[in-house]
Image (cartoon, rainbow, N blue to C red; front, side, top):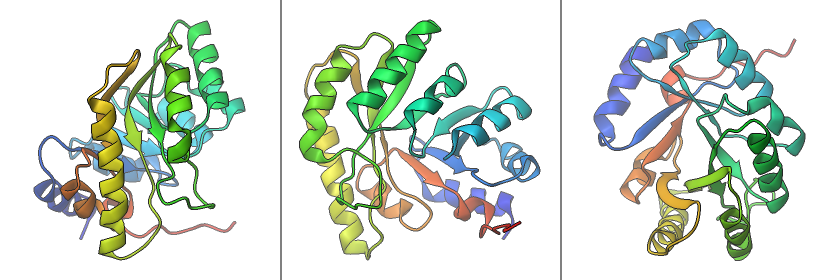
Length: 221
């Protein structure tokens, strides 16, 4: 199937209130253009440099999502360019985002990334440390928390469901409380292999790369 058919298939499988993010990391502007022509406006990048490059060379009405791990020294490059940072995972990173966005009189919309599977190879805050990070978020002026994100360990459907359920419970618990600067709007979970399961467990934002663009061809030059 081509990109247009892939997107059509996915759109038929996801409810209208679920945001589809096309994960465009390593994809060319030409490849992205095909996705843009099918009225996708949310694009996700893993690396700051690639996001900035594409921001400057692609359509101005795109909403850019930074979905990869964000290093503190890279925050300054994305001020005013990113619609949503999915990967807030520490107080140190929070303080840097607050500082850089405040200096430019901008608001940073972020998701807290939780390492729900306690996978040492994945980013995200541990569930046990969430409260401290939330307390720090409440003290901010230029950072607004819009929800949660996770990347779960690879596994079978049962294990996927287990992790997605845990995330939804945290999301629901936070939704019931009143916080400064924190509002549960987005639950970003689910990728090409498991987005249908994620949606059935409550995700309202999914990040799909290969399911849209096809298998990635790595250039080793």
